[in-house]
View 1 (cartoon, one colour):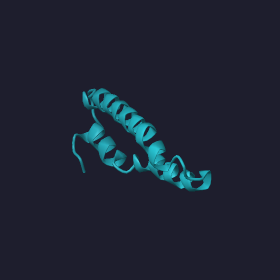
View 2 (cartoon, helix red, strand yellow):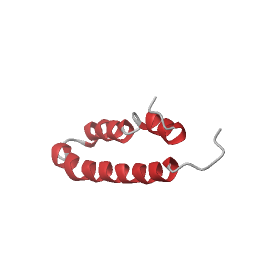
View 3 (cartoon, helix red, strand yellow):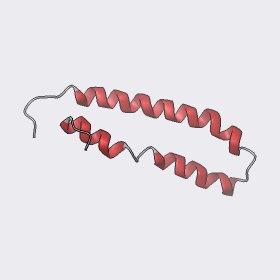
View 4 (tube, one colour):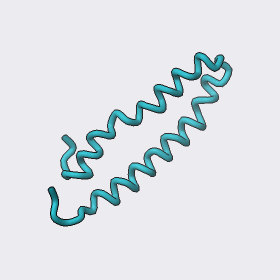
Length: 71
């Protein structure tokens, strides 16, 4: 437990929002060009995977926000 607020929390939240915005914009810009002609049943798994893949680095990022360490 920490006794004082940390600068990492607001900076981390802003960085997370900025990163997700950039990621979402990149996905929305480039993926439809690649798979837009595919049938919906084939597009769905691609968007599902891309919608979940951003969670992979999230644990380490949240640990950094709380402790200052990446692991």
